[in-house]
Length: 352
Image (cartoon, rainbow, N blue to C red):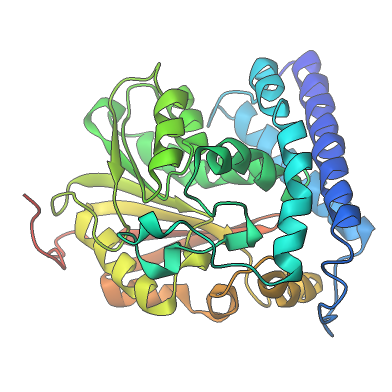
Protein backbone atom coordinates (compact mmCIF):
# COMPACT_ATOMS: atom_id res chain seq x y z
CA UNK A 1 0.00 0.00 0.00
CA UNK A 2 1.11 3.55 -0.68
CA UNK A 3 2.05 5.75 2.24
CA UNK A 4 -0.02 8.79 3.11
CA UNK A 5 2.72 11.01 1.70
CA UNK A 6 2.73 9.07 -1.58
CA UNK A 7 -1.03 9.34 -1.88
CA UNK A 8 -1.02 13.06 -1.20
CA UNK A 9 1.85 13.56 -3.63
CA UNK A 10 0.02 11.55 -6.27
CA UNK A 11 -3.17 13.58 -5.78
CA UNK A 12 -1.26 16.86 -5.94
CA UNK A 13 0.64 15.79 -9.06
CA UNK A 14 -2.50 14.72 -10.95
CA UNK A 15 -4.38 17.87 -9.91
CA UNK A 16 -1.48 19.98 -11.15
CA UNK A 17 -1.38 18.07 -14.44
CA UNK A 18 -5.11 18.54 -15.05
CA UNK A 19 -4.83 22.25 -14.27
CA UNK A 20 -1.72 22.73 -16.43
CA UNK A 21 -2.82 20.79 -19.50
CA UNK A 22 -6.45 21.81 -19.10
CA UNK A 23 -5.38 25.45 -19.23
CA UNK A 24 -3.55 24.78 -22.49
CA UNK A 25 -6.65 23.11 -23.90
CA UNK A 26 -8.77 26.16 -22.98
CA UNK A 27 -6.23 28.53 -24.55
CA UNK A 28 -6.38 26.46 -27.75
CA UNK A 29 -10.17 26.66 -27.76
CA UNK A 30 -10.13 30.45 -27.31
CA UNK A 31 -7.46 31.08 -29.95
CA UNK A 32 -9.15 28.77 -32.45
CA UNK A 33 -12.77 29.70 -31.73
CA UNK A 34 -13.28 31.46 -35.09
CA UNK A 35 -11.93 28.45 -36.98
CA UNK A 36 -14.49 26.19 -35.32
CA UNK A 37 -17.44 28.58 -35.49
CA UNK A 38 -18.92 26.93 -38.58
CA UNK A 39 -18.89 23.44 -37.08
CA UNK A 40 -22.28 21.80 -36.69
CA UNK A 41 -23.53 21.50 -33.13
CA UNK A 42 -24.22 17.83 -32.33
CA UNK A 43 -27.78 17.05 -31.27
CA UNK A 44 -26.68 14.48 -28.71
CA UNK A 45 -25.58 15.26 -25.19
CA UNK A 46 -22.18 16.44 -24.04
CA UNK A 47 -20.96 15.54 -20.56
CA UNK A 48 -21.43 18.23 -17.92
CA UNK A 49 -18.46 19.66 -16.05
CA UNK A 50 -19.55 17.70 -13.00
CA UNK A 51 -19.67 14.43 -14.97
CA UNK A 52 -16.27 15.20 -16.54
CA UNK A 53 -14.62 15.79 -13.18
CA UNK A 54 -16.28 12.67 -11.79
CA UNK A 55 -14.88 10.63 -14.68
CA UNK A 56 -11.40 12.06 -14.14
CA UNK A 57 -11.54 11.33 -10.43
CA UNK A 58 -12.59 7.71 -11.06
CA UNK A 59 -9.67 7.33 -13.50
CA UNK A 60 -7.15 8.57 -10.97
CA UNK A 61 -8.61 6.55 -8.08
CA UNK A 62 -8.19 3.36 -10.12
CA UNK A 63 -4.73 4.44 -11.30
CA UNK A 64 -3.57 4.87 -7.71
CA UNK A 65 -5.13 1.55 -6.70
CA UNK A 66 -3.33 -0.25 -9.53
CA UNK A 67 0.00 1.21 -8.37
CA UNK A 68 -0.75 0.23 -4.77
CA UNK A 69 -1.45 -3.33 -5.92
CA UNK A 70 2.00 -3.44 -7.50
CA UNK A 71 0.82 -3.65 -11.10
CA UNK A 72 3.17 -0.78 -11.94
CA UNK A 73 5.35 1.75 -10.11
CA UNK A 74 3.80 4.83 -8.53
CA UNK A 75 3.66 7.42 -11.38
CA UNK A 76 5.52 10.24 -9.65
CA UNK A 77 8.37 11.12 -12.02
CA UNK A 78 8.48 14.88 -11.49
CA UNK A 79 11.66 15.32 -13.54
CA UNK A 80 9.95 13.74 -16.54
CA UNK A 81 6.92 15.99 -16.07
CA UNK A 82 9.16 19.06 -16.07
CA UNK A 83 10.91 17.93 -19.27
CA UNK A 84 7.60 17.47 -21.04
CA UNK A 85 6.26 20.80 -19.80
CA UNK A 86 9.01 22.57 -21.74
CA UNK A 87 6.99 21.96 -24.91
CA UNK A 88 4.41 24.46 -23.69
CA UNK A 89 5.67 27.41 -25.76
CA UNK A 90 5.96 25.25 -28.88
CA UNK A 91 2.39 24.06 -28.37
CA UNK A 92 1.05 27.58 -27.91
CA UNK A 93 2.95 28.83 -30.96
CA UNK A 94 1.46 26.06 -33.08
CA UNK A 95 -2.18 26.72 -32.14
CA UNK A 96 -2.73 29.51 -34.74
CA UNK A 97 -1.32 27.25 -37.47
CA UNK A 98 -3.69 24.45 -36.49
CA UNK A 99 -6.61 26.88 -36.37
CA UNK A 100 -5.79 28.30 -39.79
CA UNK A 101 -5.60 24.80 -41.22
CA UNK A 102 -8.97 23.94 -39.70
CA UNK A 103 -10.48 27.14 -41.15
CA UNK A 104 -9.59 26.12 -44.70
CA UNK A 105 -9.89 22.38 -44.11
CA UNK A 106 -6.20 21.85 -44.85
CA UNK A 107 -5.70 18.20 -44.07
CA UNK A 108 -3.64 17.09 -47.05
CA UNK A 109 -0.34 18.92 -46.66
CA UNK A 110 2.16 16.19 -45.88
CA UNK A 111 5.37 16.40 -47.90
CA UNK A 112 5.32 14.63 -51.26
CA UNK A 113 8.53 12.84 -50.23
CA UNK A 114 6.28 10.62 -48.10
CA UNK A 115 4.69 9.00 -51.14
CA UNK A 116 6.18 5.65 -50.11
CA UNK A 117 3.77 5.62 -47.17
CA UNK A 118 0.10 4.52 -47.31
CA UNK A 119 -2.20 7.24 -48.60
CA UNK A 120 -4.43 7.18 -45.51
CA UNK A 121 -1.39 7.99 -43.35
CA UNK A 122 -0.30 11.05 -45.33
CA UNK A 123 -2.82 13.40 -43.73
CA UNK A 124 -2.82 16.14 -41.14
CA UNK A 125 -4.78 14.20 -38.53
CA UNK A 126 -6.09 16.69 -35.92
CA UNK A 127 -5.07 19.37 -38.48
CA UNK A 128 -1.65 18.79 -36.97
CA UNK A 129 1.31 20.62 -38.48
CA UNK A 130 3.33 18.19 -40.68
CA UNK A 131 1.02 15.29 -39.86
CA UNK A 132 3.14 12.61 -38.20
CA UNK A 133 6.13 13.16 -40.44
CA UNK A 134 8.50 15.72 -38.94
CA UNK A 135 10.76 16.19 -35.96
CA UNK A 136 8.66 19.16 -34.84
CA UNK A 137 5.51 17.06 -34.91
CA UNK A 138 7.19 14.32 -32.87
CA UNK A 139 8.43 16.88 -30.35
CA UNK A 140 4.90 18.25 -29.83
CA UNK A 141 2.80 15.10 -30.01
CA UNK A 142 2.78 13.95 -26.38
CA UNK A 143 2.04 17.47 -25.16
CA UNK A 144 -0.79 17.82 -27.69
CA UNK A 145 -2.41 14.58 -26.56
CA UNK A 146 -2.18 15.56 -22.89
CA UNK A 147 -3.69 18.97 -23.66
CA UNK A 148 -6.52 17.37 -25.65
CA UNK A 149 -7.37 15.12 -22.71
CA UNK A 150 -6.63 17.77 -20.05
CA UNK A 151 -3.83 15.86 -18.38
CA UNK A 152 -5.44 12.42 -18.27
CA UNK A 153 -3.77 10.72 -21.27
CA UNK A 154 -0.94 9.06 -19.36
CA UNK A 155 -3.33 7.62 -16.78
CA UNK A 156 -5.52 6.22 -19.57
CA UNK A 157 -2.45 4.69 -21.24
CA UNK A 158 -1.39 3.09 -17.96
CA UNK A 159 -4.77 1.37 -17.78
CA UNK A 160 -3.90 -0.44 -21.01
CA UNK A 161 -0.90 -1.95 -19.24
CA UNK A 162 -3.02 -3.61 -16.53
CA UNK A 163 -4.01 -6.71 -18.57
CA UNK A 164 -0.42 -6.99 -19.79
CA UNK A 165 0.89 -6.85 -16.20
CA UNK A 166 -1.53 -9.60 -15.18
CA UNK A 167 -0.57 -11.67 -18.21
CA UNK A 168 3.12 -11.42 -17.27
CA UNK A 169 2.61 -12.27 -13.58
CA UNK A 170 2.93 -16.04 -13.95
CA UNK A 171 5.59 -15.88 -16.69
CA UNK A 172 9.25 -14.98 -17.07
CA UNK A 173 9.34 -11.50 -18.68
CA UNK A 174 12.88 -12.08 -19.96
CA UNK A 175 11.50 -14.81 -22.22
CA UNK A 176 8.61 -12.72 -23.51
CA UNK A 177 8.19 -10.13 -26.27
CA UNK A 178 5.68 -7.26 -26.39
CA UNK A 179 4.84 -5.62 -29.73
CA UNK A 180 3.65 -2.00 -29.59
CA UNK A 181 1.75 -1.24 -32.80
CA UNK A 182 1.90 2.47 -33.55
CA UNK A 183 4.46 3.04 -30.80
CA UNK A 184 4.91 6.70 -31.75
CA UNK A 185 7.38 8.52 -29.52
CA UNK A 186 7.73 5.51 -27.22
CA UNK A 187 5.73 7.01 -24.36
CA UNK A 188 3.91 3.77 -23.51
CA UNK A 189 6.93 1.50 -23.96
CA UNK A 190 9.02 3.78 -21.74
CA UNK A 191 6.46 3.21 -19.01
CA UNK A 192 6.34 -0.54 -19.67
CA UNK A 193 10.12 -0.91 -19.58
CA UNK A 194 10.19 1.07 -16.35
CA UNK A 195 7.80 -1.47 -14.85
CA UNK A 196 9.30 -4.57 -16.53
CA UNK A 197 12.90 -3.83 -17.58
CA UNK A 198 13.59 -7.46 -18.55
CA UNK A 199 10.66 -7.66 -20.97
CA UNK A 200 11.66 -7.62 -24.64
CA UNK A 201 9.82 -5.06 -26.74
CA UNK A 202 9.26 -4.16 -30.37
CA UNK A 203 8.29 -0.58 -31.27
CA UNK A 204 6.55 -0.46 -34.65
CA UNK A 205 5.56 2.79 -36.33
CA UNK A 206 5.36 4.28 -39.81
CA UNK A 207 6.94 7.59 -38.80
CA UNK A 208 10.73 7.70 -38.80
CA UNK A 209 10.83 10.99 -36.81
CA UNK A 210 8.57 9.53 -34.15
CA UNK A 211 10.62 6.33 -33.99
CA UNK A 212 13.80 8.35 -33.64
CA UNK A 213 12.29 10.11 -30.66
CA UNK A 214 11.27 6.72 -29.27
CA UNK A 215 14.87 5.49 -29.66
CA UNK A 216 16.06 8.40 -27.55
CA UNK A 217 13.35 7.91 -24.95
CA UNK A 218 14.17 4.21 -24.64
CA UNK A 219 17.94 4.47 -25.02
CA UNK A 220 18.62 3.43 -21.41
CA UNK A 221 16.55 0.27 -21.78
CA UNK A 222 17.82 -2.97 -23.25
CA UNK A 223 16.05 -5.42 -25.55
CA UNK A 224 14.01 -2.94 -27.59
CA UNK A 225 13.75 -3.34 -31.36
CA UNK A 226 12.51 -0.52 -33.61
CA UNK A 227 10.65 -1.20 -36.86
CA UNK A 228 9.60 1.46 -39.37
CA UNK A 229 6.72 -0.45 -40.92
CA UNK A 230 2.96 -0.53 -41.29
CA UNK A 231 0.64 -2.46 -39.00
CA UNK A 232 -0.91 -4.17 -42.02
CA UNK A 233 2.43 -5.71 -43.02
CA UNK A 234 4.38 -6.41 -39.83
CA UNK A 235 7.94 -7.64 -40.58
CA UNK A 236 7.90 -10.31 -37.87
CA UNK A 237 7.62 -14.10 -38.02
CA UNK A 238 4.42 -16.00 -37.36
CA UNK A 239 3.74 -16.64 -33.66
CA UNK A 240 6.78 -14.57 -32.61
CA UNK A 241 5.33 -12.27 -29.91
CA UNK A 242 3.66 -13.10 -26.61
CA UNK A 243 1.59 -9.94 -26.36
CA UNK A 244 0.73 -6.95 -28.52
CA UNK A 245 -0.74 -3.56 -27.75
CA UNK A 246 -2.06 -0.64 -29.79
CA UNK A 247 -2.98 2.71 -28.24
CA UNK A 248 -4.98 5.49 -29.95
CA UNK A 249 -4.23 4.07 -33.42
CA UNK A 250 -7.23 2.09 -34.67
CA UNK A 251 -9.57 5.05 -35.03
CA UNK A 252 -7.15 6.46 -37.64
CA UNK A 253 -7.24 3.36 -39.82
CA UNK A 254 -9.69 2.95 -42.71
CA UNK A 255 -12.14 0.04 -42.18
CA UNK A 256 -10.45 -2.15 -44.81
CA UNK A 257 -7.05 -1.57 -43.20
CA UNK A 258 -8.40 -2.53 -39.77
CA UNK A 259 -9.25 -5.96 -41.15
CA UNK A 260 -5.73 -6.44 -42.49
CA UNK A 261 -4.17 -5.23 -39.23
CA UNK A 262 -6.32 -7.61 -37.19
CA UNK A 263 -5.10 -10.51 -39.32
CA UNK A 264 -1.47 -9.44 -38.90
CA UNK A 265 -1.84 -9.21 -35.13
CA UNK A 266 -3.34 -12.70 -35.04
CA UNK A 267 -0.52 -13.95 -37.24
CA UNK A 268 2.37 -12.67 -35.13
CA UNK A 269 0.83 -13.60 -31.76
CA UNK A 270 1.75 -16.90 -30.19
CA UNK A 271 -1.13 -19.24 -29.30
CA UNK A 272 -2.40 -18.17 -25.90
CA UNK A 273 -1.01 -14.66 -26.42
CA UNK A 274 -3.03 -11.49 -25.86
CA UNK A 275 -3.66 -8.29 -27.78
CA UNK A 276 -4.67 -5.14 -25.87
CA UNK A 277 -6.39 -2.41 -27.85
CA UNK A 278 -6.82 1.00 -26.20
CA UNK A 279 -8.72 3.63 -28.11
CA UNK A 280 -11.57 6.08 -27.65
CA UNK A 281 -14.91 5.08 -26.25
CA UNK A 282 -17.59 4.14 -28.78
CA UNK A 283 -21.23 5.10 -29.16
CA UNK A 284 -23.25 3.90 -26.20
CA UNK A 285 -20.31 3.28 -23.87
CA UNK A 286 -21.04 6.48 -21.94
CA UNK A 287 -24.36 7.95 -23.03
CA UNK A 288 -23.46 11.52 -22.05
CA UNK A 289 -20.42 11.37 -24.36
CA UNK A 290 -22.19 10.53 -27.62
CA UNK A 291 -22.20 14.23 -28.53
CA UNK A 292 -18.41 14.32 -28.15
CA UNK A 293 -18.14 11.36 -30.50
CA UNK A 294 -20.37 13.16 -33.01
CA UNK A 295 -18.22 16.30 -32.91
CA UNK A 296 -14.74 14.80 -32.86
CA UNK A 297 -14.31 13.75 -36.55
CA UNK A 298 -15.11 17.18 -37.99
CA UNK A 299 -13.46 19.32 -35.36
CA UNK A 300 -10.13 17.51 -35.50
CA UNK A 301 -10.07 15.85 -38.92
CA UNK A 302 -10.57 12.19 -38.10
CA UNK A 303 -11.98 10.79 -41.36
CA UNK A 304 -12.27 7.18 -40.15
CA UNK A 305 -13.41 7.91 -36.62
CA UNK A 306 -17.17 7.59 -37.04
CA UNK A 307 -16.89 4.13 -38.57
CA UNK A 308 -14.57 3.11 -35.72
CA UNK A 309 -17.00 4.43 -33.11
CA UNK A 310 -19.74 2.22 -34.58
CA UNK A 311 -17.67 -0.89 -35.32
CA UNK A 312 -18.00 -4.26 -33.62
CA UNK A 313 -14.39 -4.94 -32.71
CA UNK A 314 -15.24 -8.26 -31.11
CA UNK A 315 -16.51 -9.49 -34.48
CA UNK A 316 -13.63 -7.88 -36.38
CA UNK A 317 -10.93 -9.61 -34.34
CA UNK A 318 -12.99 -12.74 -33.93
CA UNK A 319 -12.89 -13.23 -37.69
CA UNK A 320 -9.08 -13.05 -37.47
CA UNK A 321 -8.93 -15.69 -34.75
CA UNK A 322 -8.78 -13.54 -31.61
CA UNK A 323 -11.38 -13.94 -28.88
CA UNK A 324 -12.58 -10.94 -26.88
CA UNK A 325 -12.05 -11.81 -23.21
CA UNK A 326 -12.42 -8.46 -21.41
CA UNK A 327 -13.21 -4.76 -21.76
CA UNK A 328 -12.65 -1.77 -19.52
CA UNK A 329 -13.58 1.91 -19.58
CA UNK A 330 -10.91 4.36 -18.41
CA UNK A 331 -12.53 7.81 -18.59
CA UNK A 332 -12.62 8.54 -22.37
CA UNK A 333 -10.63 5.45 -23.34
CA UNK A 334 -11.93 1.94 -23.88
CA UNK A 335 -9.70 -1.10 -23.53
CA UNK A 336 -10.38 -4.38 -25.29
CA UNK A 337 -8.41 -7.54 -24.42
CA UNK A 338 -8.24 -10.33 -27.00
CA UNK A 339 -6.69 -13.77 -26.75
CA UNK A 340 -5.36 -15.98 -29.51
CA UNK A 341 -6.74 -19.46 -29.07
CA UNK A 342 -4.16 -22.11 -28.32
CA UNK A 343 -3.40 -24.32 -31.28
CA UNK A 344 -4.71 -21.87 -33.90
CA UNK A 345 -2.62 -21.85 -37.08
CA UNK A 346 -1.14 -18.54 -38.28
CA UNK A 347 -3.22 -16.54 -40.77
CA UNK A 348 -0.30 -15.29 -42.87
CA UNK A 349 3.08 -16.28 -44.17
CA UNK A 350 6.29 -16.61 -42.25
CA UNK A 351 8.55 -13.57 -42.54
CA UNK A 352 12.16 -13.89 -43.55
